[in-house]
Length: 119
Image 1 (cartoon, rainbow, N blue to C red):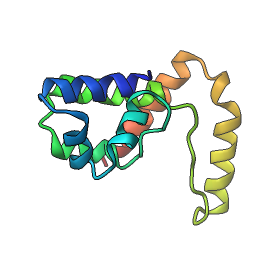
Image 2 (cartoon, one colour):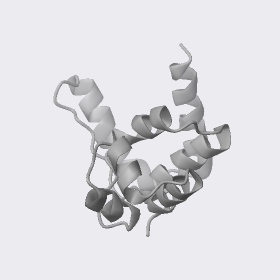
Image 3 (tube, rainbow, N blue to C red):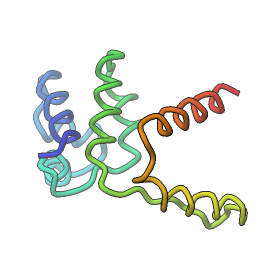
């Protein structure tokens, strides 16, 4: 079971819901939700916002959701179809160097991205 699967199951149980009820709220079949909980299927990206809109999450739960999503991801797909040549080059360069970043470099990049979001 993945971290996102554990989070979803706990959220469901904490809200006194059966699999069918949560699946209805997320507009999927019970079998698909079960597969996500068990780690057999990847959680759809859209669920991130849907879960936040359907369930009144505490700040702690929102953080837990973010961490569960991040720890459950094995790959990240980036759509570069409409990106400029410079953006494509940067994305590919970043991907190639990603595993070599030090903790300090990652923290610097994170701060840079967060400061850009504030603009």
